[in-house]
Image (cartoon, rainbow, N blue to C red; front, side, top):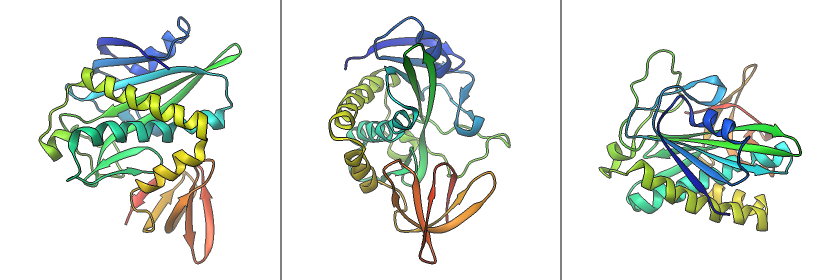
Length: 244
């Protein structure tokens, strides 16, 4: 796998740009914007994106079912983790909050959003990646957060160039994607678990209808969160996670 790169001075959303581009290219493509004015997060939230931070979307066309495509959430989280880890050194605590938020010293510095588009006999998978490289966004009441935000520069004093950093993310994504295709999700799951935030600790998982509390036990072969409460295991496909 080899990426084409598209660099934009400004975009409303790199995911939207990638979805449009999917009609015109079959090559894996990484779209990066210096400034993003209307980024999207999970559950239709806004993603605040000050200039100097990273906004990019990976576009790949894959003939797979949606469940398998969704596992790229973990593949991408490991790829971004690898890229950040390579730059900041080992004196900082870098972890992954289920399913794909990257935490640095306990603060959220990265969010990942997957979207798909059906194109005849193939699916366009778009993976949006937002990273607080330089600064922490100023949040208003419209931004509900479950984890305190931070930035790489704020936590480490290391300043990273977004365009150069995109090449490092792409490099690690190719390695992890190849690992996923050759060894399956079990290997990705094993590595992800070794980097998971609050594994074995008590957490809260909130869905639109319920709130579950228990010990964060693991994730299953579908990437579902497994928590244990009073000896009973509960598998959760999607939820907001709160650390106690």
